[in-house]
Figure 1: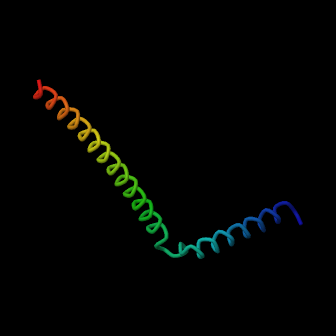
Figure 2: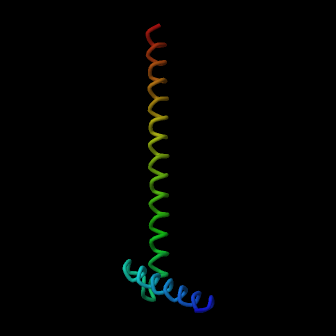
Figure 3: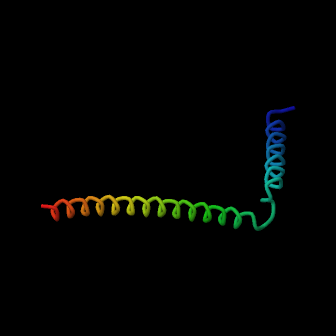
Length: 80
């Protein structure tokens, strides 16, 4: 066998393997590209929601601490 024939056989085997792998995960039809894009959009939405939740929690903690400090300062002044 020549190097070209071996390369062609390897390319064919790689292509078959890729097709089988895509079939196993359900990405073998004409909707596969759209499915992948939908998954990417879903993941991006999850990341955005997670960042918003973390940001909101940090804001509530900050406001709570500042409120507690203000209350403590106010009660300290009221007592004098």
